[in-house]
Length: 116
Ligand SMILES: [Zn+2]
Image (cartoon, rainbow, N blue to C red; front, side, top):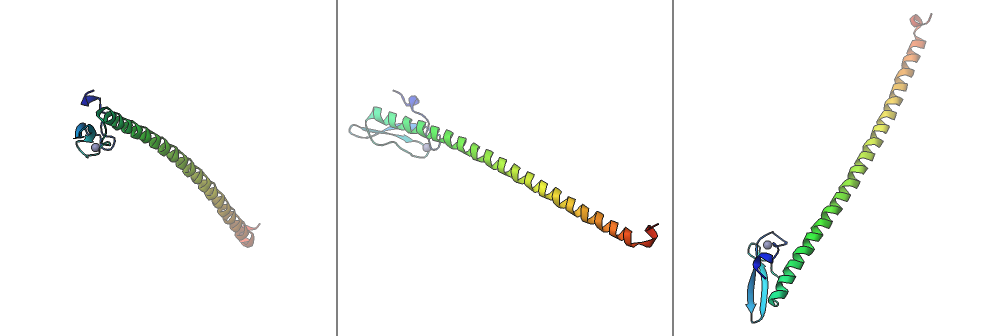
């Protein structure tokens, strides 16, 4: 197995490298952020590193999916709230118009010049 089969660092995307940690012990470490796998046998270090990279990639996908669902619900709620506010505004304007029309009719009724 070569270093090229190691997946990029799940935390920063940096390049991984296999390091010797002592007799029979190896670990994979990111050259950029220094994140590392456990100190185990060489093959196991590859497996651990790539499994974590794949797990985090899957978690990122799930987080993106959930964020999309939350944003969709929030957009729907905002749309509902906007529609409700527009209906309330229309009701209030209608009431205001009725009051204005009623006041004009009363003024007309009291003005003798307007009555013939
Ligand atoms: Zn890194």
